[in-house]
Amino acid sequence: MPKIIIPFTAFLESAGTEHISFINNLHEYLSENKCSVEIKEAKNGYVVSYKHKPSKRVVVNYVFRKKGLMMRIYADNILTYSDVLTKCPDSMKKEIKKAGVCKRLVKYNCSQN
Image (tube, rainbow, N blue to C red; front, side, top):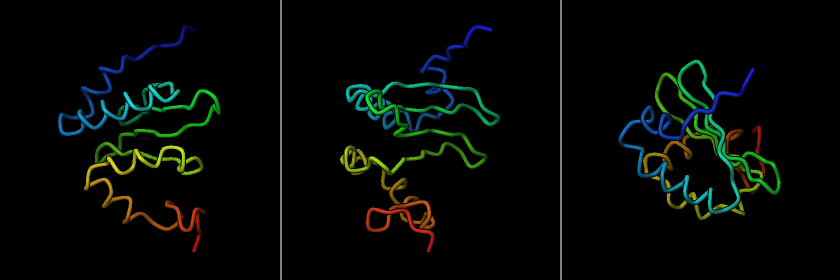
């Protein structure tokens, strides 16, 4: 069965107008920094993954949840793309700060405490 290619514009249309500028800026930044994008259909929308080509590690995922679009930032390489985090909207930074300790870095490690 041939692999279905979902265009980036389909994801943008479903993401909502309030996020388009941020998504486009991050897409451009990651594309310029050796990341490829893969878009798959999921239950609530799309899963969009950015993979760092040299390391083959996923850096960022966008996922759709009932509450809306969510972004996962994988922290194992955070020092290589920390400047991206400073460009995040204030509402996103607020959600990152509210995340449980096991979902964010504490002294450069993920903590279960």
